[in-house]
Length: 271
Image (cartoon, rainbow, N blue to C red):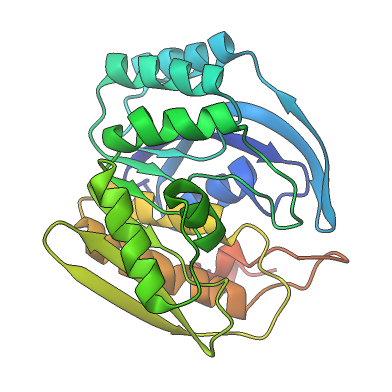
């Protein structure tokens, strides 16, 4: 099968394979596209938490982006973990040079186990400059609270926070509602023209490691293939919902989801 599009992923790695670059690669591949990477940090973690983080030299992150794009030009870019202001500055410089229009930002700030993955200076730079560069930003509720300095406990709070992000310069916002304890998970999409609430059934499971990374990569994949941003969000949410439902139950903590949920393998290739 020939890949449908090419995507550059700028993010940190996850040694347990459930989140970060590893989840991004699996998602893009499972949805039929080709993924390239610029690794921003190496995280030593498993399903129970993060042990340590090793940052990559910002200049080498810049070089990864530029050198890769000179050879294979991506149709879209997904940005994940950017742990320092120096990293964000280099990414911004690279984005200016390669001039790719379709960019999705997943503002990764806190790991599932609670470890902080970004510093305060980086958060400010993200709000002031990076948010204006991207086509879509996809924060979860804790991330949206940090970015907008508001408390989110209701659907109305999510809408308010999304509008605050629009005021900061975001073109499109998708706030993920998984952190609210409702039977229905509400993900809210907002831009200057419309608002859309996506409702999904909540699955009772602790195996949700990497859902944010996976969703943003899925949305990026659909956008890279030419689908509108709102439709891409809808399709990405459906993919993640199916991946959560069919999770493999690995690990002692927050286990990974099933990135292969979208694949239907021909019978003759089944083991």
